[in-house]
Length: 137
Image 1: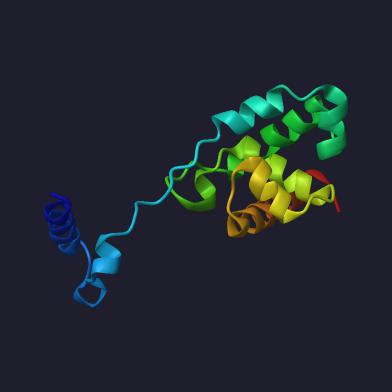
Image 2: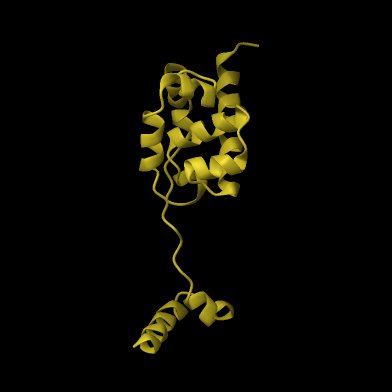
């Protein structure tokens, strides 16, 4: 029955949490949402060249060059903003730089608002580091 399932779920979860977090609220919560970015990548691939350039202020070749340039700084983590594919991170940051609202970027790229700001900061630092190494002073 439903009550037995809740009891089972609660007892399984209780063993994973410290005593101060053992409550029915913690035990009954849903797991974190696993975000899927394949649909976002497909949408980006199907944009015509003019719209792509209007959205990101770069043509596709320059965009890909920037993605390749920043590739060494981005690792693939299992959670948080680092789990977002590098192409989407660069695209979200460029969209922000092009005047996009972080709220629109959240909806368009399937990201949380805190993740958008973390990505913008990370991409900015990466580009700054790369340009420091490429431009002689």
